[in-house]
Amino acid sequence: MKVKPLLTASYLAIVMFGGAAAAVAATSYEGSDYSYDEYHLTSGSDMVTCDRESDGRHVYAEYQIGTGERSSVTDGNGANNSCALRGRYASGIIEHRTCEAIDFYPDACGSRVYP
Image (cartoon, rainbow, N blue to C red; front, side):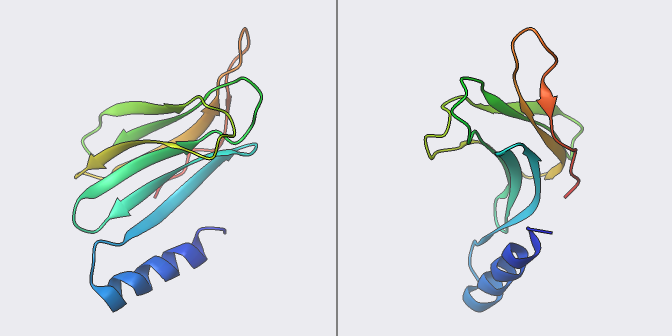
């Protein structure tokens, strides 16, 4: 699993520096596009989605937070080396998946992941 080394490194950063390090809990992929939830020790969770394909289609992450509320965050800038972020949910993110919007067809979505 791709996440395990990052979790170990983040855990070590928290232990060694005692600070507000962030840990990625789970990543969902749809092709080269992806989304991940990021937990901050002192302030809650963020949802991040990254469009890594220059194909004219935007990417979004559908997610649910610990209160039961569902939402999404969209990155529509193609492979321009930036991602979209929404968050600081104190209740945490309990599941999410990455989807790519496709005109006139159902959207292509990756697997749901459960941090």
